[in-house]
Image (tube, rainbow, N blue to C red):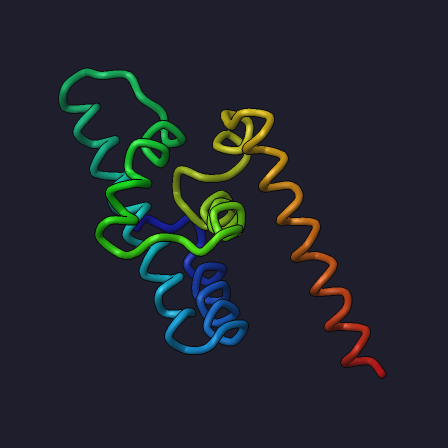
Length: 128
């Protein structure tokens, strides 16, 4: 998986490991890395074949194969993983977000709001 910012990704991995039991944290990281690796291979193959595709189409095309390899996502986790991919993956960022359907954008925005709310609650609890 090619990363936009290594220090950010290392922080994300540490947060994922702390926010879940060790086994599910490692499974989440393994899934994200395998999904992005597959998507990168898909993009490379399309480039070699002079096919036109996008990083989002590569993610869509490789999701099922990744689930077959790594395991099926628990309900509700796709939005969380997409949020992390948008933030961390070299092909992520605003361009990836803008290429999403309105539904996909809504899922990611709702997940971002939920994460922010949880962070605020944690900060408030730590301040008490």
